[in-house]
Amino acid sequence: ETGVTQTPRHLVMGMTNKKSLKCEQHLGHNAMYWYKQSAKKPLELMFVYNFKEQTENNSVPSRFSPECPNSSHLFLHLHTLQPEDSALYLCASSQGSYRRDSGNTIYFGEGSWLTVV
Amino acid sequence: SQKIEQNSEALNIQEGKTATLTCNYTNYSPAYLQWYRQDPGRGPVFLLLIRENEKEKRKERLKVTFDTTLKQSLFHITASQPADSATYLCALPRSYNTDKLIFGTGTRLQVFP
Image 1 (cartoon, rainbow over the protein chains, first blue to last red):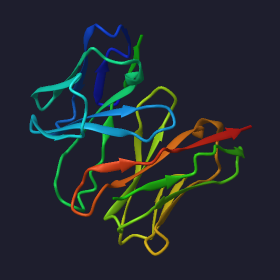
Image 2: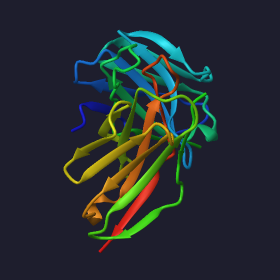
Image 3: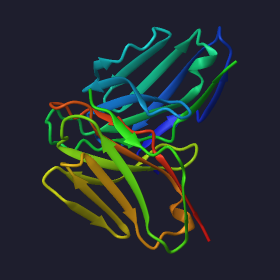
């Protein structure tokens, strides 16, 4: 039990499909994140939400659309993806602080394995 | 911008030995550095944080050092066990005045009996 729950754990979708990944955190955190992890590459930060407001979008293609209805829930809507988007998508949360020395510890979910065919 | 370098080659060691993993960063000295463990197909799990004014931090069989002169952190697992086999990620703030982290690619540790 990590405190951050992601569903589904596995998803196979065609390039014309629309699907969504869901994340819920039970830790009372104020910040939530979407990361992408591909083989042999470092974790890539995609989106950041603080107090349900998007504060960061790292040049992510518009076929990925995040939604954060409240501080506990985060969605990633997927539409017309490409095969190269196949990866492990990780949701995470943290207390959220802009202080340099906050020691911002990230709590990750188990991830959603996405395969685009 | 800040970059992290971790040895991409897997580290294979015998049970009972000490495993040492290295994390090097390239630019400014971060306020802190973190280590995470990631098992195959699962999300990373936070292990330890060490701050810039700390030389060493311990937690059970884990020890982390932080050398701001060398721009390096070492992560040690003493009396290693097969259950310690995993990928270990180093993370630190991506720029000077932020708490947003960047992660290394990780080093895979394999402990064999």
